[in-house]
Length: 158
Ligand code: THU
Image 1 (cartoon, rainbow, N blue to C red):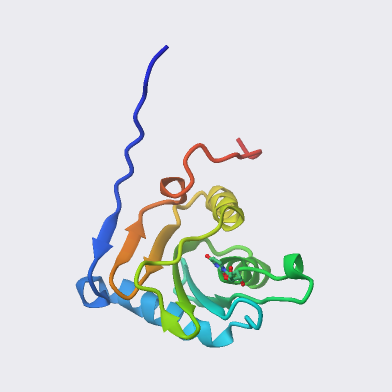
Image 2: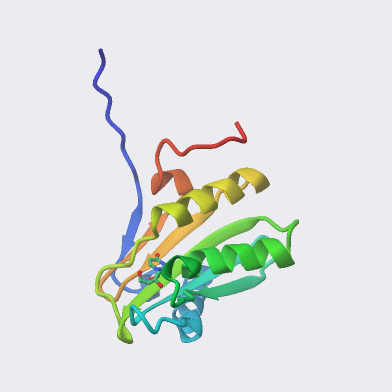
């Protein structure tokens, strides 16, 4: 038997002004994308901004439905829209911002397991790391690749 340790390195920022221009743009786009949230049940508005390798930014927002499981998270609306409209362009970075009743959460909203799994698959499909930026009012977290938020990910593409 061996005990093993898993170390995850990520960056934390106190405000977008500490980030690169590109990341500041993506954070602003994720905040803007919240406007597209349709969340009559949770009143939790999530915006996602997905940067593609050619510079295109695809926005997504959570879409809810009276039949709850029929709704979809912001991250997946962005990734599915990108894959449907730009199927050959790798995904490079995904920023996510969650607000409760219109107020940006102090700590970043973190993606659900299903969204992480979808991120992992596109990362694999394009053979290109997807950076993940989680936006909160008091802190912003930046991960270099999807495995950092989904260790030991299942992949049938292996
Ligand atoms: N939600 C997202 O869109 N992304 C996340 O990362 C977490 C949760 C949505 C799903 C649902 O519409 C609402 O937030 C409350 O869970």
